[in-house]
Length: 97
Image (cartoon, rainbow, N blue to C red; front, side, top):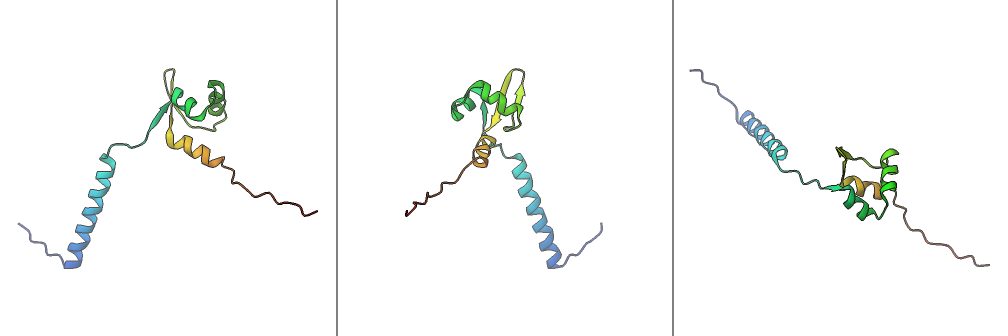
């Protein structure tokens, strides 16, 4: 049997790396919190027609997954699209003339 001796700093570094590795493994094994919307839910949420949704998919405005004839969207993608097209309000100036 071989004896290996570590300094306190080396021991602390090993423990730190093991804790980091453990955290990363726990994150990967955690259940996904991402929510998927089917096409009907997406249409209702966005208040659009099927044709508009098809156009947005064709133009690459919204990402989607398709399994057979069923289409799914990530809720975060729909929210990101809304944020991307957000127009900030501005005050209209009155003319003094």
